[in-house]
Length: 201
Image 1 (spheres, rainbow, N blue to C red):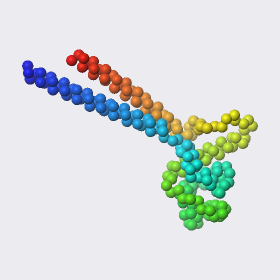
Image 2 (cartoon, rainbow, N blue to C red):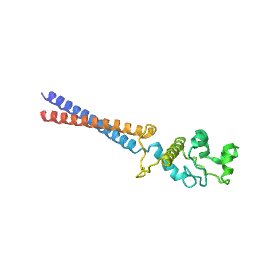
Image 3 (tube, one colour):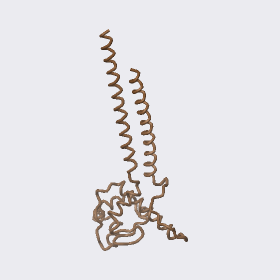
Image 4 (cartoon, one colour):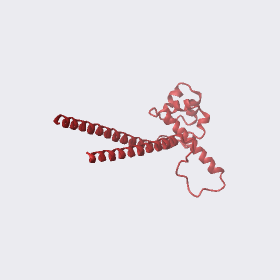
């Protein structure tokens, strides 16, 4: 009788430990899902990242549609290849010294003022700046050809399939949110079953 009682007690402890481990795993999965959701929601869309980099690094010398110290950048993606743009942004003077025809022509045209190097920017970040330039150039064309002035200035980015970063962030956040809800439901069910079984014992 005593051995049976010890066996039941040991088995009960094992079941309790197993349940505790499962509960810890579920909680960890829930916290991970919440962290991923927050990260995705706060990830900047490509055009927004390009805008912030442009304002911090380029706006002092460049405008999208006006010539300042440097050339207007509207249509730069049509005049130059992306590889050329990336190389020029990383180090314009390296290209000038190497005798690149377009780089030398720009250097001479704008009073031989060297453009600062931005070697810390990744290729993806430079592409995002170009995407922002394309967006701004397109917005300026719409404003000049429109007969009716807009009552208020647009302060947000339109949701389009071209803005793939935003769309991916949105769908990713939605999927993670669904996962979090399902996990929370499972944890709640498990707790109810556990406490019910405990009451029966």
